[in-house]
Each structure stands twice: as structure tokens, then as C-alpha cells.
Length: 46
Image 1 (cartoon, rainbow, N blue to C red):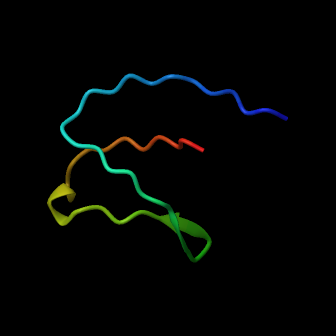
Image 2: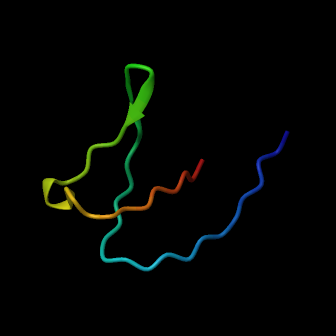
Image 3: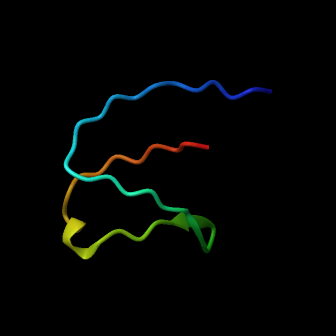
């Protein structure tokens, strides 16, 4: 079954590309400490 790809247009201040690491029964992405308390958007690209 093919996964449909869609285009998102997002305006922001910075972008990081990271790999999600396993963490218990979930996944985790570490972000810079100055991002704490900020609103972020996560987009899965693969």
C-alpha cells in the first residue's frame, strides 16, 4: 500500500532535521534547550 505524500507550507524561525530515537514504548527527538517552552511542528518525511 502506497503512502500518499502531501505538501505542507510552514512559516517559522528555524528548522532542524533529526532522527527519532527509541525511548521505552515511544520515540524521542532532542531539541535545543532554548526551544523549551516554544511551539513546534513536527512533520514526518519518510
